[in-house]
Length: 179
Image 1 (cartoon, rainbow, N blue to C red):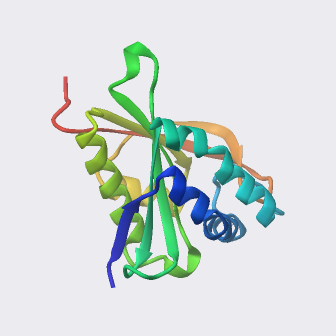
Image 2: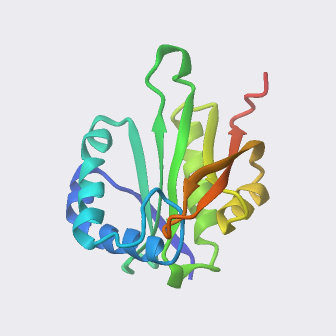
């Protein structure tokens, strides 16, 4: 079954906050480096999603969720923040591409990434960029989706267990923006 991807508004974020908190908890507990450490509880995960409400509501954060089937549970998310500085409004930072560990291997991450890229082009974004843990499964997804490595920073962030890892920076030019 293919991923059904839909945008999440402020109302949707409030409605699905607990489901999103459970997703974040599962992904972090599965060892993915998303900026959180082991011991992330439901309340802290829910509070993090709540902290996104202003950005979702003002449009600076575009957020999508995936479900396996139209009525299935949320099994993944992706978002991007549009730069607000006058000289950077053409770019956005891709953030928090996450897929529930039980839903991996079905193409959900690739579908979410492709959707975010398509929506970025529609919004006039010419450049997306991101960082991800070097050597992670996510890094392989970005490489295979045509993202360009910009470099690696040693000891950039810790994994959920607190061990430091390098991160790889990637970018992708969109909509023929190759000046």
